Length: 392
Image 1 (cartoon, one colour):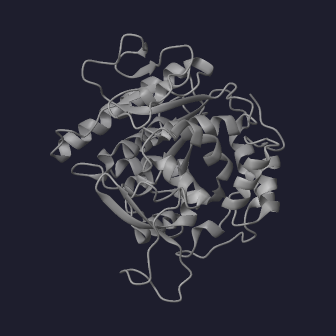
Image 2 (tube, one colour; image 1 turned 30 degrees about the vertical axis):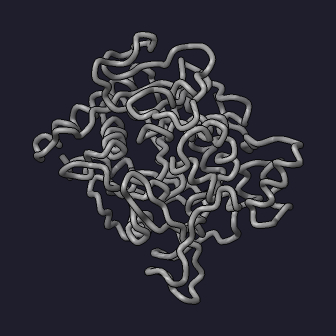
């Protein structure tokens, strides 16, 4: 598997209705919409012109260069796109694998999802690749999702995704924080999950993992954890990435961290998200084990969202890719609720387009533009050991 001079679109069509749909979502800019349809995520054509942004300002103005994706893939033969937090992260992992493969299926890219432990194990029709660690869903045609069915605690999401290389989509079982009440238990949990990720990566002989997270709790710690933010699934996986890279014989292994739709999980306030995105400049991360993180820039993800929507449209409208789609469409049918002038938090005269997000008892106000962008992060290899020593 190599890389090419450009990465063509995952959305290629002559469908006039779709073209008009993209035109609407691009704020009445048909020319830009046509570029998205014909050329896809070609950042040189569709990204904003601003190439730099000051620390603490609008991080969307710091744009990610498409050539960085090309360099990322150079010399890599075993590449996996991994949904770090599980659930709907897999939909974006699958879609991103298509994007990397020039929009013609997923090719030789592996795509996978991190899932919670399941009492009694997974169903018998799931292949066990590494016991208690790595699984594959049943082969054959995808199992379509049923409108508004409960997918939590099941593998319905994973089974709904088309099959691909190396039995994709694969499942990596991550031990959860339930019952964790002390720092000693936090350390044991982190050690256990690091070992599980090591087993999965070694079985697959990976030399590059692209970790995707919808929302950004992998960046900030979010709210879904016990005792310490590192117990959250995304943080457990990120810590395991860095630990695996320090092991003897893993010099060729690398990873990339991408946050899609920052804030769409309603777990991080605006000010905290901004602080963590820019922390690579200030070198003051909220989470010490994230030291050495570098923010490489943002990129628009309209084609990814459109390609993902058929997979998620049967689920609740507050699932993360569905929220991204609603932010993208921004029409009467799918529009997100806006913050109004009479409400707390509204600043008169400020250039703002804040939407109200509510998920699993969490509520946040998030700029709509954040929900249709991705953020790319790298981690300084030389900082890995120092960061890991900070915890546990």
